[in-house]
Image 1: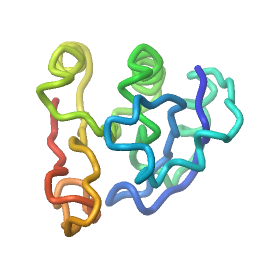
Image 2 (image 1 turned 30 degrees about the vertical axis):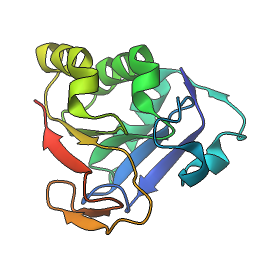
Image 3 (image 1 turned 120 degrees about the horizontal axis):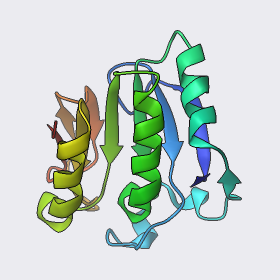
Image 4 (image 1 turned 45 degrees about the vertical axis):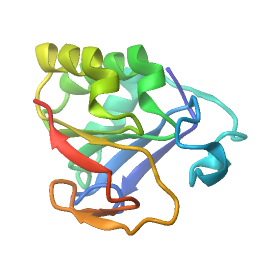
Length: 154
């Protein structure tokens, strides 16, 4: 799979220590000029095997969740699925997918995830500049815009 980065131990994107995968593509639905992930666009692509990532996760006693983050994970849905399959071979821990899409825009992908996988949380909604941030209980973090929310999908 191709990623822009891997954070072995992250304490910002979920209420539990997490491994974060930074996905490589985006369609700029939020408006690229406001993207806090813009530095990753120019970062080199990293090719890494899903099983290697899963093995690194399993070897780390600190991490308790796997997070897919931006650019936009849903642009690489097949890679996300392959990673989930590899991850589920080593862990039943929470998987969090950060997406800028609204739920209705990716309903087919959500249905697919619900049929084949468990313990997945999705964060929905585009960043809207100039709006107040808010605390999201399910994730245990502050999200940048009031339209953003998380939901356990399975």
